[in-house]
Image (tube, rainbow, N blue to C red; front, side):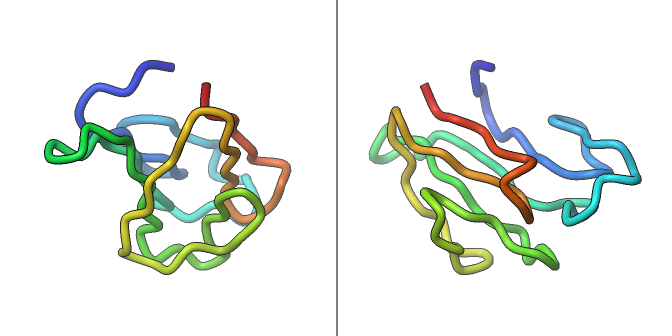
Amino acid sequence: LTISGVTKFGRNVAGICFPESTAGVSGEHCQIYMDSVSGKYCLVDLNSTYGTYLNNLKITPNVPVQIQSGSTFYLGSQEQMFKVM
């Protein structure tokens, strides 16, 4: 997956869309985008019910955190895990 602009993750998004029955994933769960100032990718939890985790640590909703190659993040549970390459 190559990120261009903003990519949203959730059950009701134009982006990485999960089936409605996916436990622990909100309608609009989180998003990734490239910060225009730093040139780094950022992950933002969109106030999801079950949280977004970066490297097994829950991130604060609506606060962008930088992600690096080799990082992992998941939505709600480790069953919905992604690895950043």
